[in-house]
Every structure is written in C-alpha cells, then in structure tokens.
Amino acid sequence: MRYRLSILTLLFPTLFLWACGYRFVGDVTQPGQQWANTTITMEGAGTDANPVLAQQIKDRLRTQLSPSGQSPDAPKRSLRIQLDPTYRVSILETSSGRSDQFELTIKVHPVLLEGGTTRRLPTLTGTSRYYEPKSGASTDAVRIKAEKEALDQVIDSLATLLITYP
Image 1 (cartoon, helix red, strand yellow):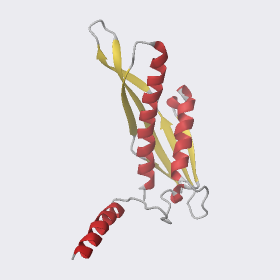
Image 2: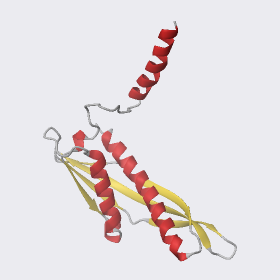
Image 3: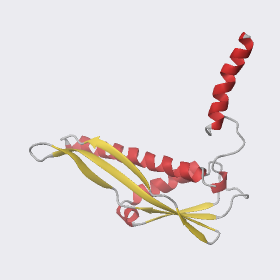
Image 4: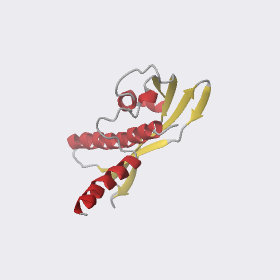
C-alpha cells in the first residue's frame, strides 16, 4: 500500500507538469522548431527611436524560437514586429510637483506573413514601474533595469504566443 502511494505521489505531479506544457530534460521535440526558418524584421517608430532595443528584441526572440538553428522541416515564415516608441508616465508626484515614480511601457505589434497570407497577432505590452532617485548616476541604472524588466515581459509573452501558435 505504501509503495503504491509513493508511486502515485511521484506520478501525479509529473503528469500535471506534462499536461501544463512543461518540457522535461531530454525531450526530443524542441518547442521552437517550427520557427527555425523564420525571418524576423523590426519596424516602426520605436525601431528608429531606439535601435538597440529593437536589436535586443530581435536577438532574444531568435534565441528563444530556434535554439538549434535551421531546420529543413520548418516552413518559411516572416515575422514583422512593429515597435512603438517606449514611453514613460509619471505615476506619483510630490506636493512640489516633482515626479519620482514612473511607469515604463514597451509595446509591440507582431505581424506574421506565411504562405501569402498576413495575420496580425495580438498587441503585446511590457510594463515596469520604478522609483527614480534624485541622484543622476543611479537614475540611469534604474531606468535601464526598468527597461530590461519590460523587455523581458514582451519577449516572454511573444515567445509563448508564437510557440503555442498552431
């Protein structure tokens, strides 16, 4: 009886994780193989305003979608990502009118071109709230960290959307 209970204790979480889409070590099916031959291009006003951010999105997405490089079985697709300019909004203002808490937003509009058809995918937004200290040197570091957090949200959402795409 104890043996059966210990087997069920191990089997149930494993099946639950598998059902949720968790990939176990050694799994032969790579989640991004269907995207291995995809061309990714960055467009929009945000690309011109912040080319470094646009390149980071492109590079990180490429890394997540095709971890093993080219695949002869994967279809030829083109993914155009329209990047809006990043913007920040003041959230909290002191009585003197000085703002020190902000919200940074990165917004992308992915468009998939496949087999002569164009499909607009949902707009994805990454948001990060941060406190901007009064000193100048640490302000840049805080702003860069907030941009990285918002970028991580966008990349994770976009990769999840594409990997689960039929």
